[in-house]
Image 1: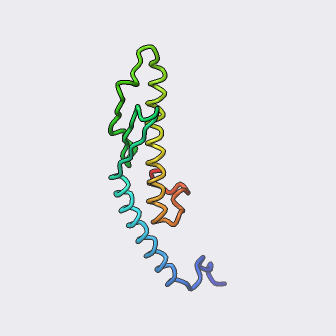
Image 2 (image 1 turned 180 degrees about the vertical axis):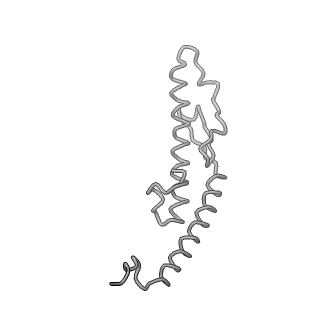
Image 3 (image 1 turned 120 degrees about the vertical axis):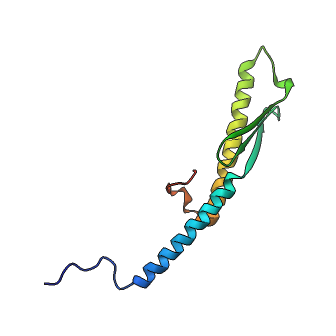
Length: 118
């Protein structure tokens, strides 16, 4: 009786080609991740009274508050506007990140691949 059959058929050439494609995609993904890290996005809320800027690493870079939005009698509203501006900027950056990575992965980036920022 012969030993166990190999799991892969005689298609070793196809496996090598697939490996090269995977390595190429990995390099392209690394470049795309670097490009995304350099992106910056601004978003505002409260009719423009609060503007937040984030980068591709999801770090808050700046927060601008129009002095007209500061009402000592209604601090809670200002807090809500700030949260909305930051969340809008984060959402916009997530969309841009996903779009950049989808160009490389053909849309499979959302499958929870290790090292993916989303």
